[in-house]
Image 1 (spheres, rainbow over the protein chains, first blue to last red):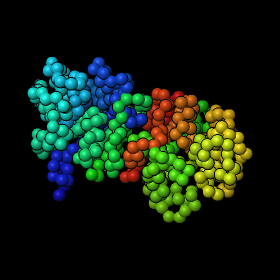
Image 2: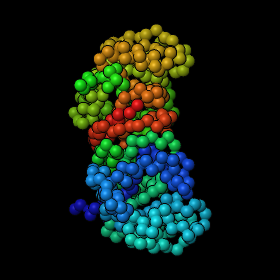
Image 3: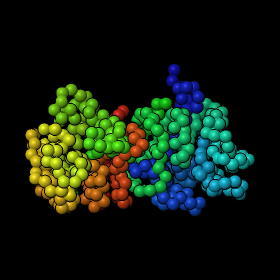
Image 4: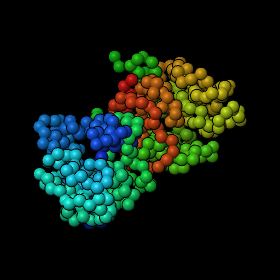
Length: 222
Length: 222
């Protein structure tokens, strides 16, 4: 019997990561900062999504294109019951929290689901409009995954980023699928996605090509 | 009017590079040596080709599979009138030549065409069985390209590798197409293909997916 879309064959929530990567392997450019969280050139990795109707709709914007890329952007958001992200992706700098910082995504973050933030510094949960809640997890990636699976119920868990969080879940052998959007851009420097992950066995299971980006889904044989 | 297959729109031989790259960007593994020219794990990047009938036939072997990968391997060899490679790909170590060294490919190299080897050390041309000739070029990449175009006539010129040769031709703005075979293998270290190439504009023009590898052709907008 085929498990539901959000479930892995182990009967638990499927754990996926979908992320845009430059052809030379970066998910952010050099000189990341609070003012420029994706680093120099990093926004170029996401232009394919910004152009789509489905991405714009999820971010409360009108217009956009209905292309193969739009279908990919749409699918990327479906069936996800909880997200996990590293602290740097939530933002606000290092060290103890400045609780005025509510994350990069404004008053209505695009997740519309529970988000678990990996951090070394405790903080009370944060609820925002549109159903996104941020829970701050200080006891490691396994705890965060357990909480995310609990929150996701029948649905899947998405590792939202950044590179370090993805690397940790890949290295821990709990990522079921890696969905790469390979963007024909050379950043030359920045934050690489696939460093320090050991030698996982990856199997391409689906490829969708557009003039802007090549979407490749890999199953991780853990 | 459409130019012949081997010609770029500038009316000269089209200059292409087709090369297998790991998902983390390497075309050879760590610890390359005379005994192990592709480095640790580097052979894993070529297994998709070794399995095909077309690759085996070109290398004088029987058997092999007729798959989408076989068509790609076949096409990669068609319409190429001359090859250019770096000295390390020809092999034999650094410094002045030991003329006993005839290259990695045995007595019947798989090129069956003129090959121009970039080197700092002069050496007389070398002819082998099956139509492969090696010419050693000491006056730079532009000279090698000019000689290769002359030799190729109506056909195309292929930059065979290694990384440094590809990088130099990319950076010089003379590569017309980059055909990457992206292999779902993580090497973790070794020789990266896409370092130090500036910020070329790349346009995906064709994608062929198989269970073993994702073939993506990029046009380079020089």
